[in-house]
Image 1 (cartoon, one colour):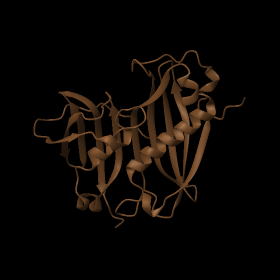
Image 2 (cartoon, helix red, strand yellow):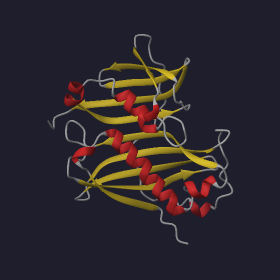
Image 3 (cartoon, rainbow, N blue to C red):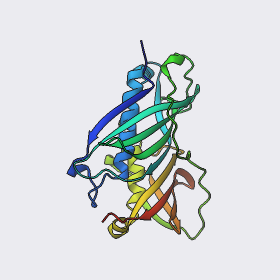
Length: 248
């Protein structure tokens, strides 16, 4: 069986999927990254159906997104993915987004960790064929997710309790819900005047239904450092680099 190192999916951005500025929201980009990675993993024989037989599942650990521009309403865009590296515990997977003319408009880097679905600890992938992880030849020009520094005491703080719609089939908080929580910190006026040039997010610990967390954010110049904290422990860390929105 020939396993293709690259996989592409073309989408059409509807009005219902767009944000208040008529563009693709970065939360949808994160969702599409997860979807396309899942589709490619299924094609390679290392998706949910194959891994769950060994009681293993993939968990997104780190994600970086850099956008040159965002798709707008009624625009077609394509997301292409490939595996950069892998070992017995995790896999690094990259993405490029192109518009209908084939122009590159964004890049993404991600790290996926294999976990034991019962113990929720790191699993071992050595039972799977090496050929199931074909390495792509494309280069990804953006930096990997960096280390988020400790936030200063002057950071803003707000609280949130995770609810039913935050939970996915793994019965933990859905990846995109963490991003929703962070982005809802800013006003509509802020997003009218600013675009996210780069987003980095790192998932450290799972959160569950009914848990109360603290969102801490510190912004200096055009860089916002963010963290979601539960009982004094950082569960999610993120960094956002902003640029002026001149497309209004």
